[in-house]
Image 1 (cartoon, rainbow, N blue to C red):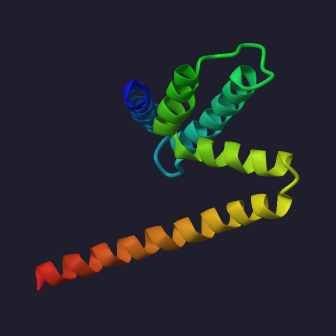
Image 2: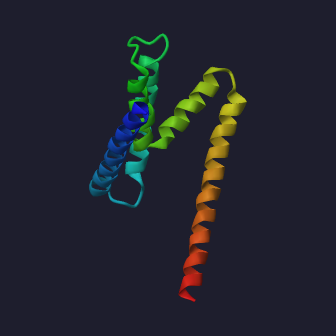
Image 3: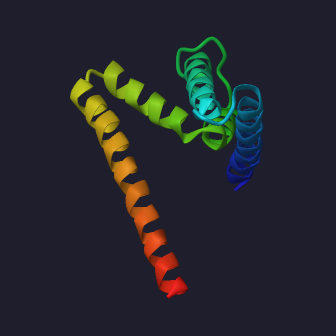
Length: 132
């Protein structure tokens, strides 16, 4: 149960950091392009990749499991779920499953874009029904 608490605390910290980075980016560069989201996704992917390697099996620092989960699932997961996607895709490439890695990339992008479009469509339909 304590593991879930560590993940929740990390998730809260990551979410607040994501919001702060997005707000700062919009203030500095404008909101025409989602620079904050791009920066967060790249930074989160860098952090989770480094931490997973540095603290994982064979890494220089054998971190306790709760510490690994606090950073990877909690902070990085709250900061950006793209970091988890990136790490899992890298693991597929490294294990020699390039086909599965590409399937994960293409499937995630296409299915997530389709899902956000369908969700938006459903919300629009409900809005129209309520307005009628």
